[in-house]
Image (cartoon, rainbow, N blue to C red; front, side, top):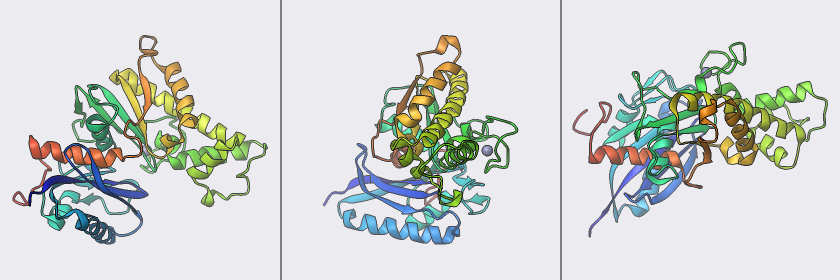
Length: 333
Ligand SMILES: [Zn+2]
């Protein structure tokens, strides 16, 4: 019996890890989600994840052949296959992610950061098909960006280009997970939205359905649900988050001249609550000649995980053609 090739795409996020088996046409099979549990040791995470992957592959293993694994993860270095000081994961400073998966599954492994993976997914299967210059900004536990220039992901000299989340909004501003102050991530991530909401609560005596919720119990989802119900302070928190995000998107657009900027991740799922103020602010802060040229768009992948598809597209690409230095196959390590 003949088997169809699939690659495994894995998106490791600060809160949730998602994986799926992706066919060459972009069809994703057995997509599965599990909590990352960022404070848990890496060995336990690997144990849970590999078991879930084997369980998910078992029912489709008869007709499918696993050819490779692509992984998107925060601070993952495309060139070495390693996770370097992942900001929201307590796994140590230098994790050989590619090596771990290669040993566990015996197939070639390619690694990139989660935002680059999302950009690759949007380019291969989403709304950026045919675009040569665009950017994907991921708004989740952290804030990342994947930049595509001339149809290629921009990695930069050290492999970490695209850290929009750690560009500065306010040098005297909030402390960021990276140790600096005033980074975009401290404002436009899920946690940043909660911090903005709390400071609005503290500075305004207006009524809010969330006034009785302690900070430890607050989540971006609660702020979103309150905003959907018309809660004035929750709406104001989204407005302020979008305003700050738009300023940094205008900076990025001034540097890169993208055709479009795509917003992905949990906060992007809030739709117009975040897109409307971000669009207004982007437009206001763009240089004159660029106004009304840069589109701010949602992912074209709908409910499908861009990072899973992108991680799959990455390894697919390397199975077909060039291989980065960090690309490990069973025979190379
Ligand atoms: Zn930072």
